[in-house]
Image (cartoon, rainbow, N blue to C red):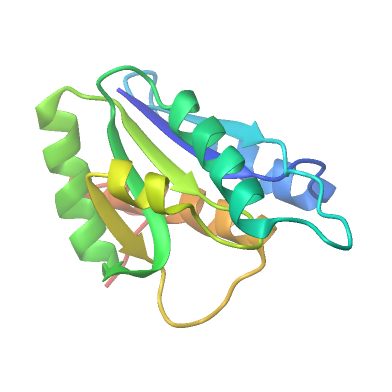
Length: 156
């Protein structure tokens, strides 16, 4: 199974790539964690933000593997505990479809992206910098996998 995180933004700080790689390499070969960086549309002084967000949304949706279950990360989505995520991950693995988690840019996700997604997940009411979201996602996905597989990484 492939878990693809499609995120708007490139040229992240070095620590983000290192943390991402650390968690991605911990997964077994049967579960791959992959990152697709979507270029941030250039925002000038009089930029049409709605149009730029739509263009980024199209790129996010196009990056999703065919027949993948797409999930938007959005502040308006449902909050999942780590245990909730583990239950979902177990269902996803049993379902046999790849997963695509879509992370918008500084202006969020387009309405098209939110409609395209089968569900919407909120990491909570806090606002996180986009580089940190990638690391949190990688760690929480790995933690959920360890719960499903009774690995000692997660302790309650």
